[in-house]
Length: 342
Length: 262
Ligand code: HEM
Image 1 (tube, rainbow over the protein chains, first blue to last red):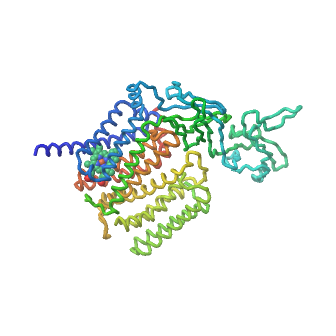
Image 2 (cartoon, rainbow over the protein chains, first blue to last red):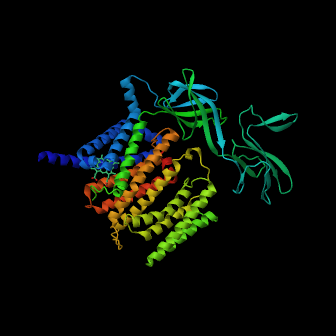
Image 3 (cartoon, rainbow over the protein chains, first blue to last red):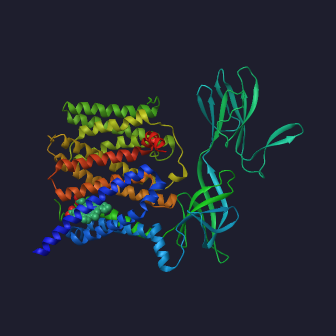
């Protein structure tokens, strides 16, 4: 039958095309790994690649149409359908996808961008990747920004010959470094360190009105009994006074940083949330995730903004793909569904 | 390279020693004894993991030291699973794989405890890394069987032939590899607001996954007409996995290359 012959030839071509596209994508991914994330992003969003993704999706659909197994074997169907759906979600959510949808519907949507919000203020402006500013249809107020550190912090002391001591920071603790290096005592810990002049003396104080300036006051005792005071600032690690033979760093690891925000629409607070890394806020078709903060004073937060268009489709594809692979390779064997095993 | 003169280090060396002893005993054809020693190595390895867990206070899957430690310990349960359920041989080789995988944990990677940065504080952290590790051990075993086949060796045990053994293990590992990729992507969405960021590690993991997709299609197209090429895919898959796992370290080796290009 000529029709069957044609179909067989089509199948052969589709399989070869599929294999070649897979090999091509392997090569492109490896190429992308060498050029770095930023360039790779541009590369995989370029026009030739857009054509590639489209052809791949069409080939997958063709595959399901041509091969009975892909339609009848539940697992295989779910796997290939899952891939089609992920590709579709990816295309819808891509830069090109947004451009086309905006053109068709005459809208001007925000795809990805960044917001910087000062503590206590309300913000609607989103800065896009290309520097353009667009406004959200609602506003976000940063009620409070908090940084938590792992306790205790660490005092790191390096000697001239490369020896290193790591000391957990506890006020009043004294550590003996060695016979010739003497000892060090952590006298006091500051969050808002400031030097204040009192007469002809200068004394260290906590000044909450100034910016945060975490520091330690150390008392060094030499082996000959002489003493001196040193200040170590978190912001200037590896600091050393000219005549000292020791270098000091004060280090704390960030445990968490979070933005307590309110979403304000028509002058009403519509929702509240603590945005943390890994805990974004979903609102109005956008995701707001904790991206960064003011490292000097902790006064503002940086929120990443992404439109969630296409995201649900991608995740649906993930579910189908995972259900498919586990069914096809694991579960159908357990449930005695051995339809077409070789 | 450095020897770890700590309880942690000693536990790892002890696990390696038991694995190695088990391997030697297996070669002298005392299978039962070999299996028992392998089990002892596993128990010691588990102790090393529990010790680490208590020491750092979070799931010990944060850095390459911890990942290689767990990979080495997983060699035992995966070996037993493959032998009993999938009917795949090569238990002696698994003992050696265990030693080889524990080696970097024992001698190469730093065991300096680290605190979990905010990005790693999510329920996805454990499952994402764990399913990847399970699949990596399965794919390693698959590649070993594939190499045996490429070297023209047949199993003497009453089990699957190497080419089919490879296929079965890739079939067992592929769903886990897929799940690892998907969980990673969901994590990326939560942490960075993007389910796919095109960064090198993501792209290498995609490439490894696609190598196995290619393998399945090639094997479907040609069946056993080119058994050696079938097996070659599985070996290439493992190479891609190793590069994915070590890319951050490897890319440092390539930095000269980048400097030159700039
Ligand atoms: C990223 C894309 C793809 C993925 C993840 C994928 C995945 C898979 C998997 C896991 C299998 C099972 C192999 C086995 O049981 O040994 C399979 C089989 C198959 N795939 Fe794909 N595939 C993809 C693309 C394609 C394309 C583009 C075609 C179109 C021609 C295609 C056609 C087939 C066919 C005909 C089979 C064989 C079915 C059988 O075993 O009876 N696949 N695919």
